[in-house]
Image 1: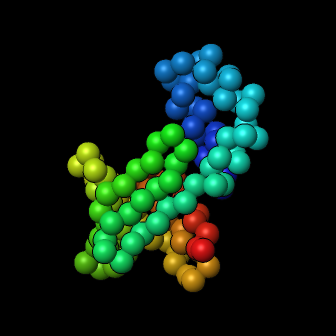
Image 2: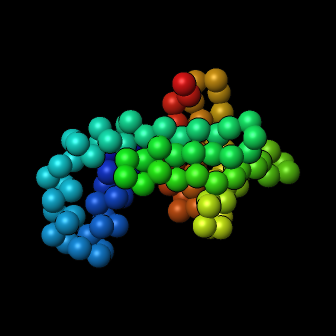
Length: 107
């Protein structure tokens, strides 16, 4: 999934700054390495933390009543809802609001 995420990031940056997008594309391998090092932690106290280099994020989380969605609210109050596609002891697969699949390996 990392190559897809890198493509998405480059496409988003290109909308605002084509030159910066070209620079990111030339550093694709480094960007993939950075993304592979990101840790997303859902804590038992219903808080989460995403350790993104230069942009850590945190907030609260909860499951939907039917247990099929994760609802996150960041510290700025923005809410995001992801559908749980698969959840095993080894991985979690979510479908985000943009209908993009995200695969997380469990530690």
